[in-house]
Image (cartoon, rainbow, N blue to C red; front, side, top):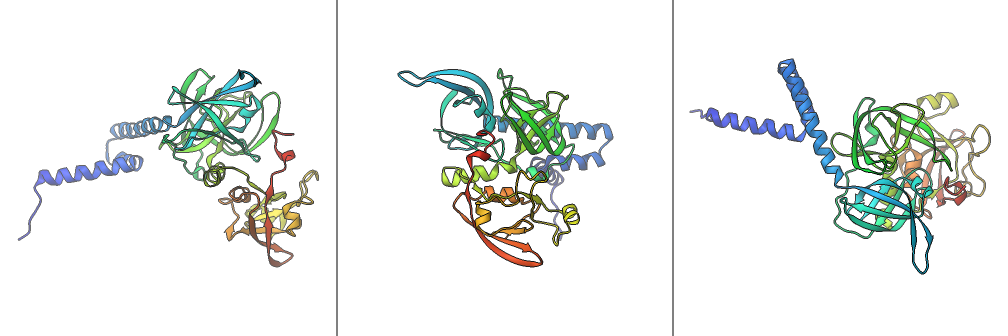
Amino acid sequence: MKKFLPKNLTALLLSLLILTLVIQNPLPIAKLLFRIAPIAQAEEIIRYFEEEAIIDGVEEINKSVVEIGIYSVTRQEPLKILQERGRATGVIVAGNGLILTNRHIFNKGNYFKVVVNDTDVYEVIDAIKSPVNDFALLKIDASGLPSAKLGNSKTLKLGQTILAIGWANGDYRKTVSRGVVSGLGRTFFASDGQLTEQLTDLIQTDAMINEGGSGGPVINIKGEVIGISTAIDKDARAVNFALPIHKAKPMVELYKKTGKYEPGWMGIYYVPVNAAARKEYNLAYNYGAYLISEESGKYPAVKEGSPADEGGLLEGDLILEINNTRINENNPLSDIIQSHRAGETIRLRIYRNGMGLVKNVVLGKWPTDLDPLNP
């Protein structure tokens, strides 16, 4: 004889199942409800779930957002005298006090203090600049801090909702602004009045970024960091830029692993290869990195005396893989190199004049004359 669950128990189990699905992934469930519910009711449901997701995401990320005081040391002995030069924002990326921010804050000062939880003040014990983009790491002596979850900036789509968080004008703590991804892969020449730097592969957004918000996290509605605020186009309305977080991950992971950051350097100039580049340069593959000198001749394909030169690379080589990792749009050569430190030997599979070759290159340290902050 068949047995059936009581109606009230069945309804309870069904309600629990729906609630679990909603909590785990609210937006797809909201879209389903949109199809089966009356239009007005469905719109309310979607707005409710989206707002709740955003509120939860902001509440979570705010625990790891910090204020950075920028100072210049005017005298060391017998008493250190500090002059405040400005403020910036950062985000904790490891519980032991590792903070990700912008490199250009070093243009303003040489001494930093970090405010955690709006009240706790720490001196910076280690400061590391990236030689290849506008990222920096600050280390404070702390433990057990809430760290942000780093998302996937490679999957961003135009029109996607994002939020920027930072110290607006250095006065308004943890200001949240909402916007969308309004452009991808942008290039922008940023200037602080002293130095001008070309920033590439940027996320463009209309989410407002103010002075003091530099280095703050840009997050998706799940509260995952997908970018770091870096620049504002003051000649346009609501055109702001963030560095994609996947560009910072090699730096963060290398510092976590070794306690320092000395990214490898090859000394090459290249064109990332895709279907369009393959056709333009008549290449045998639609992926890789094609070594070719810059048009003006300022940057040679292989710098004389560089690790690439000593490793036997030549202009016209097509680098296909590094340590068995294929070079493509998802794994650009620059990201792969940054995940290896100076002194490491990497194995390159290259294509040259119809032949496949393997070359070993010992990575060097970045020359200081290539650092935009040390012209």
